[in-house]
Image (cartoon, rainbow, N blue to C red; front, side):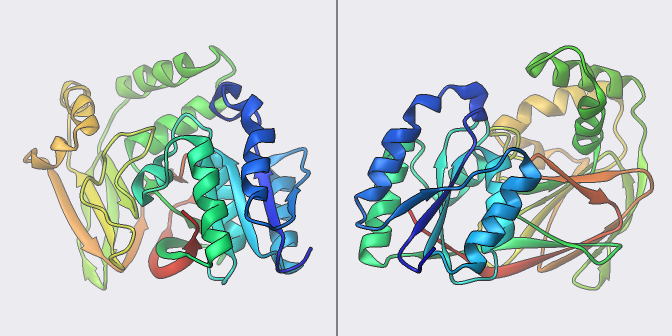
Length: 299
């Protein structure tokens, strides 16, 4: 690959495949930039991430993801902290990073915007969150890291083989609500201890997760800060009542909910795996750092 090439990672199954037929049109639209467009080949998520790293190492000019937040998570591991242009064509069920960064929600419009940005040399610097695990591994995310009840639900849903589709997540919520209990968290924000006992922890670079739930409604991916939202001890009924308010972002006015802003977040608790952009990252303890302008977004 050359510095003029555009490499594309496509997940045809994203969004339950509803945009699968658009891939050829997306590639054509990207080709209007005048650059050679190359589709990366991968048979698994791990291979996809390796293919992205390989493309960046070979000097590709831009890396584009065609899919949802899972595709974002794979592609951004390769481009974060580099000067390679990065574009997202939304084709998933969530697309929370796209929504939070002003990328067009229509796939073809997003592809046109990327092509124009490449052609004119236009890019917008966007913050990303860098996660360092207890083992010293580094992962990046663009939208939100969950480390409370929602992360526990994700972990449960991933272990379930039935039912398929969204109903599996709904069932996981009911099962975890039945065993809901507050957990003790060590939470250190820019060196200041804010440890607490509670049920909800989210660290946001963007405002939403889960396809539009405004968990960190005031998060701005260009302000150099992370938004942290936590909730103290809540019973099952209180959590169930709080959930619908996430769509409007009004949960942050609840007396049990506290919001912070920080550049660095150190979070620890026993028995919890953090999930970022909907993907399993690692067991807590985690250190999350905002890296200003970590990606050059083509939009």
